[in-house]
Each structure stands twice: as structure tokens, then as C-alpha cells.
Image (cartoon, rainbow, N blue to C red):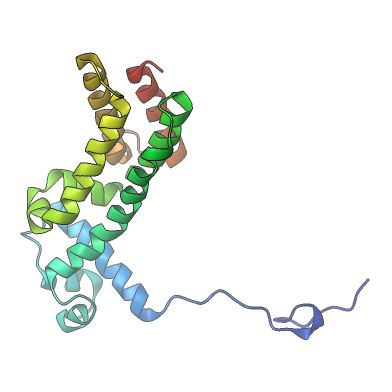
Length: 204
């Protein structure tokens, strides 16, 4: 039996590298973003003020301005992770074969993104002022959905193909409200069930 190592040290007496702790600044930014999403979903982007967001977090308005100089900058920070994730989804299209395996691979990733960002996705889908405020970013999200829909429809699609692809995307959109429809369902269950629906719609 080897000699015990001292707490905080590995073999050879070397200090173990611990994962860096989040800084108070990053914690505050995350709290601001979470509060902003809650308030904007409840009362709309245009109706939500930075003062209300600061009060929700329990900080001064000046502290909020330190992290986000404007409400538009805050909205950009909310949307950017979603834009990046779905940009990656769209980038997969060129390398996929449109068969059952390819559709499942693409739509699983697409659904996982919707479930992961469902609060933000719901905000974008239900508040036109978000689309107006950040037309370029929101437009990229819409175009990603359109690209996925065209891919699902296939080359030289018939009207039936186009309609089924549209229905498949609509079914995927249920992921945004899954927490309200089936609050006890876990994320994996939501994705698996919606994938089955999409496969049936596309007749794969």
C-alpha cells in the first residue's frame, strides 16, 4: 500500500490543478441575463427597463451598466449563444445524407438546441420587438430554420415533401413549450419523442 498523499497534492507532491472558480463578475452577468429573460418573457422586450432588471438582480442600475452599456447590448448577449449553436447546426447540412440516420442526427442536434435554449427561443418566437431590435441575429436564426426545412424536403421536392418538412419543423418547435405541455418530461425524453414524431411526418 503506497504512502498517502497530502490533501491537495497528487503523486510526486505536485499540486493538483483545480478548475477555476467563476468570478463574481461572471456570476453577476449570468444573473443579469437570467433576470432579463424572465422579465422580457413576462412583459416583453420593449416594456422591460434596465432599472427593473437591476432591481430583479438586486444591484444598482450603474452596476448593470458596467456589464451591459445598453438594453440592446444585453439582448445581444442573450441571443448570441443561440445564434452560435444553430450556426453550427446549419454547418452540418453539407456533410449529411438525407436518410433516416442523417435526419435523426441533424434533428437530434436541432432539438437539443431548442430544448437547451427554450426560454430564449420562446422569447424570440413570441415577441416581434426582439426580431425588430436585432434583425440580423434574429434573421440568422430564422434562416437556419429555413435551411433545415429545405434540407428535410429534399432535392426537387414535391408539394407533399414541402408540407411534411414544414410540419416536421413545427413539431420541433414544440420543444420550446415542452416544459408547459409535459413538465415532468426530461430533456432526453422530449427530444426522443419529438424525433419519433418527425420521422413519422417525414415517412422515414
